[in-house]
Length: 352
Image (tube, rainbow, N blue to C red; front, side, top):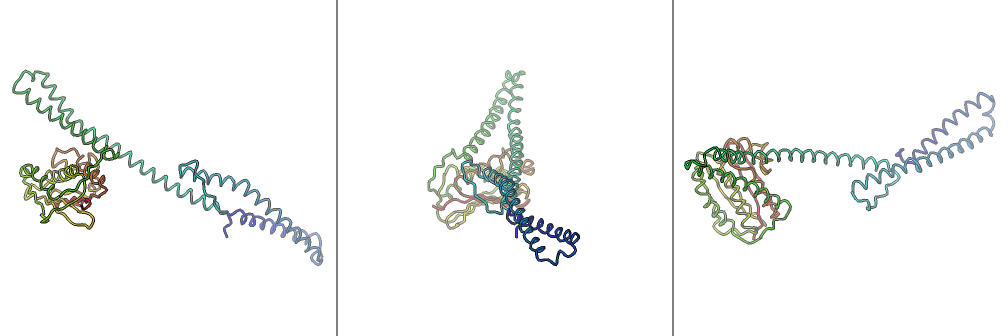
């Protein structure tokens, strides 16, 4: 029996009052009248008066609980429900008589939901701080370089033929870096908002991968990295935006070259048939990524400490763009890595 239900609670309290009255009646009558309990009318009076008091007490308690206390609780329940659904016009459910259980459950669920929202807001706030700090850091370097070059030219370098052209070239490179950062940020924003429309076509991802490796061959040789494609022996046809997938392959392979092993470095591209999809994996034997950094590699501007030591180039936007492009195709991308062993990036595309 749930005693916090109105009827049960009223019964309990009425029973207590009736029981207390019965004890007091028996004591008082026994003290005042010596032979009172020998008469039938004494017990009849006790039964009638006890039943009357029980009925009156039960009615008063039930009326008080239902009309005053529980009516207020129902309003609280409805208010909580309306806030949770977020629509004032949405009808709230009518709970059963055990409304306390419903209110308690609603409040507990609401509390858990709000705690999750607070934790999410804290994470977003920390992400916002990190993002602003990273943007500031990435923009600061080329801006300071430009400022330094221009100051040198204004201090007399402009009249020196050996200095002016060189510093103007350096200024141009820093400006190009700024423009590239802004273009990448704009592309990420368009991908996130869905404004960037994909041009889905049917193409051979094996041939596309070969094109990308040919373009990066000189850079790979400079870093003493060997680029290898596992030839499937036949076209690997997929559906997707060819230009965007070229960008995905370029960014991942470029990363594998930049952070690759300087002795016997190797980057291998392999294709796997996954029934409805084709899985493309790019594996290197480079410096690797630690477990704590692995979950953040797709964040904008995020670069591991080992990555910063390995090279000062790179903006930390390439993998963020890669992730958004793959997800815009309604596909998945994953990464696995170990320090000193290497890293594997894998993404899927729908088989054509």
